[in-house]
Length: 235
Ligand code: XBP
Ligand code: MG
View 1 (tube, rainbow, N blue to C red):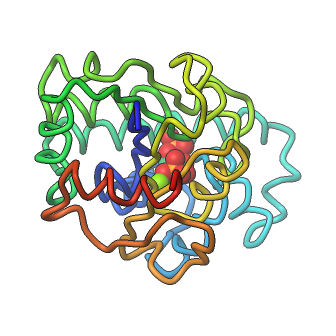
View 2 (view 1 turned 180 degrees about the vertical axis):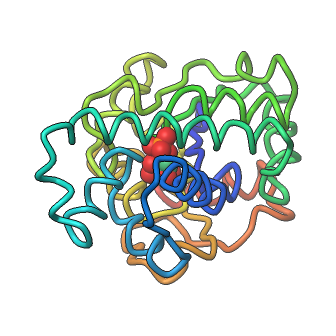
């Protein structure tokens, strides 16, 4: 196991309610009466990427809006506004890391293990989350950061993982990915990356067939336990 590849949303932190509230803030600011509650958002999480998620919502709930001549400007504008609201929440310290993840990161980092990130979220979101929770230099702890800006297609397609593997110069089998969702798992599987799932309230109960293991928390998780689970994949 030469590198750990971290997903961000739902893995490093339970970010999705902050994303959800930021979407709602952006809709309200633009004068729309759309409101995403937790049940609806759980369904919308089927689609990764904020812009893609807004479009998916409109297809199912407000198809007439998609007929607007300015729809291809409206969705990015709403998403930009949403990112602003979301980053404010991060910078205000409203989104802590998941319990146990910082201790795990610090333990692994002390051994010199290589870290990378593979996420579908917007780059500025990753930067703000890491800085707010781990300090100004935390971006530099990761050998590379694959985010929603580096590849055209998002999870469950494997592209962000293959991009990261290429940057790391490692074979998929030499890495371990930490993910929270089925979309993340499928992206790993398509890239050949062994994947450990740690669920959260939004993803618990999804189909995680093929994951190395399915845990509920990072609390008490050590590098030794990660090596144990990785060993299951590599015999
Ligand atoms: C995360 C996402 C992202 C966030 C919102 O999935 O799907 O879209 O929900 O971020 P994963 P943006 O954890 O599998 O990477 O609005 O910046 O897209
Ligand atoms: Mg995730």
